[in-house]
Length: 190
Image (cartoon, rainbow, N blue to C red; front, side, top):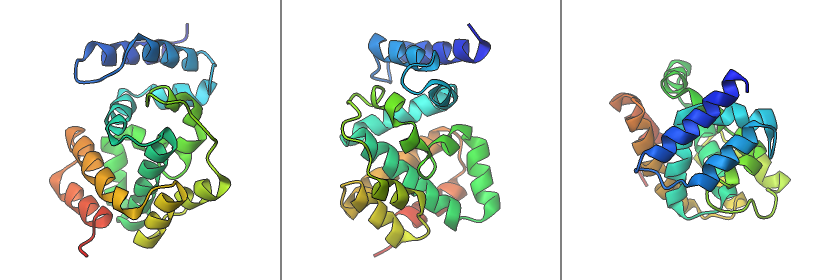
C-alpha cells in the first residue's frame, strides 16, 4: 500500500474516531475503496488525502441538499472568492486550508462520484453541463445566484452556505479580517 493511500485510510479512521462527525464504517470503506481506484481513483485519493477536506464534507452534510448542490454551491462560492478577493488574500486562504482548491469552481463536481457516499446520499442524476459551466464561472454575486439556480437551489440558499463555510474556515485558522471579507462577499448587504 502506498504512503498516500495509507494517509487516506488513516485520515478516514481519524475522522471516525472523533464523535463530532457523523461518519460510519461504510464511509471509511468507501474512502479506502476510492483511494484504491474505485469510484474516482487517483482524483478521489488526492481530494481525500487532506483531513481538512473530510471535515468540510462533514459540515456540508448539515445542509440537507444533494451532493451535487453541496459540492457545487461550495465550489461556486469559492470561485467567487477567487475572482473577487485580492490575490494575496485568496492565496492566504488556500495556504491556511490547502484542500479548498479541490472544491473550487467545478473541481468538486468532477469528483462527485467519490464524494456522494461521504455526503450520505447517492450521486443521483449527473450534474448538467449547464450547471457545471455556471459553477465554473462565478465572477460576481449575480453569477453566484445563477450557479445556485443551475444547481436547483434558490439564491436564498447562499445565506445558508455562507455561515457554515465561514464557521468551517474559522475553525481551520483563517483570520477574522479574511473571514469578514468573505462574509461581505458571500452575503452582501441588501
